[in-house]
Length: 309
Image (cartoon, rainbow, N blue to C red; front, side):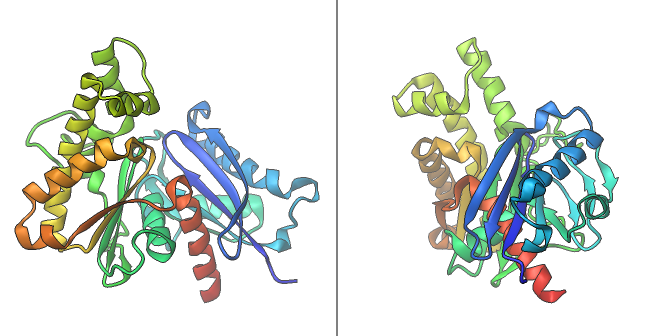
């Protein structure tokens, strides 16, 4: 009997999301765990395997119903060998042969790639980047990642490490970044940094959702925080647009949930800082597939890889 389903996993610095999708990329089951409850690499690998087992145990899904497992991961990945080089925001991972480990545990084909690349693949195939040959898709969350579409194909670079816009330095000097660099864009606009800034200003813990809601109510302190985030992001994007002459930029991830208070200022900064020809062409969109983009991209990857197998 032909396989009918794909299991997709989206691992971030905050959450581990696992879903079952049909072959048309419709999500039919999903579960979310906090990444932070797993103290080390071994615990997290067991959690990934267990999240798959929960869909296959008790006769819910038979293994021969599953085409394969796709993982989107928050860092540089060798997608051909299935090795994780490291994760900037999850300690303890270095040159981990994750594909081999999981295939041995699960008895199913496993494929992995960088999460932002898979988000870009999903938005290009099914979302806001459809119809644009040259696009940047970026995720704004604990980390800031990007996937680049050039000439209608995902651009990987020599080591599958292209697209790391979160680690573009935006100052000569600045705060240290978890990647080992300094003054990276992520060190200014990753959600942990936004919330740290908000706590300092509001003198209490505050969520991204509340910070966005306050800005929509014209709270000056909240507007000031989002304005600073947008200026950093818009300036970095202007450099990318000047370099690549893009048709479109698609922004997703938890931070993108701020909506117009972020997007309007990003657009204004981008148009002001980019060169006139490139600025005139590029369009800015909020991601269509939202928080599901990474899962859908992981499923697309499995289907593509299994077609070649």
